[in-house]
Amino acid sequence: MEYTGELVLPKNHVMVKEEEMEYLEGGGLGKHWYNKRSFIATVIDVGIAIYFGVSGYLSIARAKNIIKSLTGRTMKAKIAARLSSYVGSVFANFFGAVIDIITAISGFSVGGMIAYGMDRLDGKNDGYILA
Image 1 (tube, rainbow, N blue to C red):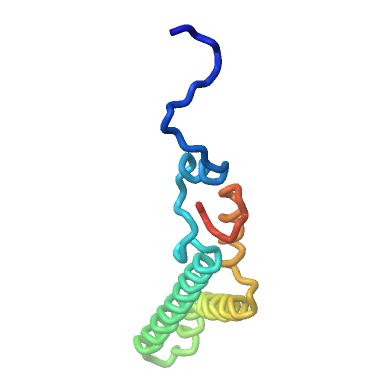
Image 2: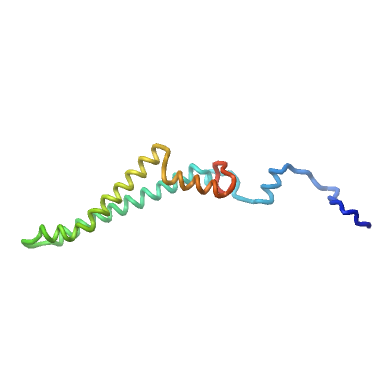
């Protein structure tokens, strides 16, 4: 057999479109509910809200335990000294949770921004992550 420099395909080959070739070669997850940008954004938003809610609750529980442990005439000074470090974290955690819930309802959320960035990073920006 003589070499001609041309690509010779087998007789049983099938021509496919470029998109099909990209999918077969590129792999990816495909377009499913679990890698849709809106689903990923919701999961991230729920995770952030849970984190802030639990952190705020734990901070308040810690503050209540501190108040219960204090006795004596100098209680006001002790309360002020011991709780000053917890007040900021309580407000920050609840404020963060409220902001995340408001932004998630309005459609402009932290999870939405992260999911949008992930979608752009996969090179397609098609509403699906790693599709």
